[in-house]
Amino acid sequence: MRYLFFLIGFLFFPICFSQVEENNQMIQNNMNIEILPDSSNLEEKKHLEEVIEAESPAIEKKTKTKDRKSNLYKGKKKKELDLYKSSSIKSKSFIDANDKIMYNKIQSRSQSSQRNPTPKQQLLMDNANEVLQKEAPNSFEYNLNKYVIGNYNTSNYSNLQQAAFLKKNSPELQRQMAAHHIISNNQKESKYYLNSLHENGTLINPSIDYCKDLLESVSKNGTLITHGMIDSYGSHYNQINNHFRKDVQIINIDFLQSDFYKKELIAKGYKIPNSTNIDVAFFKKLCEMNKEKKLALSFTIPKDYFISIQNHLFINGLIFEYHDNKPPKNNIQNNVDLWHRKMNKKVIYSTEKETKNLASNYLPMLLTIKKFYKNTGNYKEESKMNKVIESISNKCGKNKHINKLKSAY
Image (cartoon, rainbow, N blue to C red; front, side, top):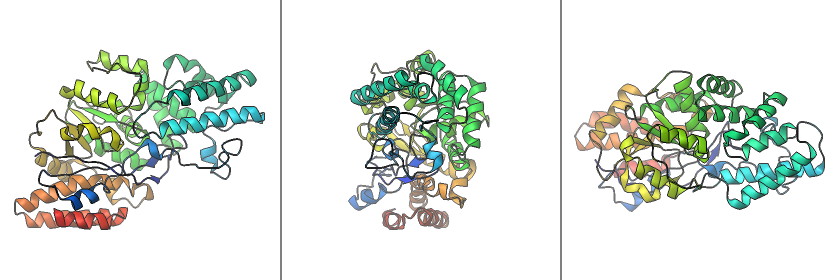
């Protein structure tokens, strides 16, 4: 059955790893689905866009302040400050430069249609880090930032190593280390730093549970395309640490800034667009060029990436399958099997606050199954679906939208 797809609004909420950089969990309401071919009802479209919670870069600027200089994060939690703050007393010019890097990196990650920094953002960060290098070339700040603003340039790994020598327990340092080793396909080190992120609370259990269901949504030997901290690191954790669904190839849009990462994917048979910008145009070409790779696009990808390919997208669990103008076989049954037999559903039934919005991403699948049961006259199962949908909508505070949707379905 064909799923026409329209797009996701934004309803962001901060959770544990909220992106004062991308490691403090911030999820965006990034939904977008017109679930059925006969769903041309405008009211239905209006409210479906409120359903899915996705992780978008636009949420990544949690901290707002009038002073972008030395007091940029005044009053914020110590854990957030730890990402970039100076490790010792520095000059005002050093602090200002460090804050400028932090601010522009957050802004670059806050773009809804592009993953890499703009030329202006990159220039500002490069110039600011030259100040750090001039004043304190052996500092944690300079070396960490040298790697961070290199956008996963593996040739800057020595700087990351130096930063680790100076401050090995920094959450941001550990996140960058995990990224580097995932990109480099170093399973042992990836496992170590993913465990570190789990232990320090950056990678939380709800994210890991959610990503297990995310991976389960992917076809055998398929390709899962992810976007940010929640879907990417949680999925890698399940594969590397839990040995779960290792048949799935994960492609992180963020890591595609790395030339080394691109070359590794090419060696595995993937075709990569010839572009330095990792944006919506790049994403569209990536999907078109690799349509035979059983592409599964995480709901957590920002809406702008989906607009130009919406007619190729079909709901399957917590992902959109990409198909070249052909509806997938047994799509409804696949969703039914996922729900009843394969998914752990821990995020849905957990009382942890971090699961509140992640649970929303199950709703498109459930609305699809509900419609199927209604159309086939299985009113008993439809009633069960209604109860689950109601429970999730209560949990996520989406009752208004879901109630209107249920009447359309």
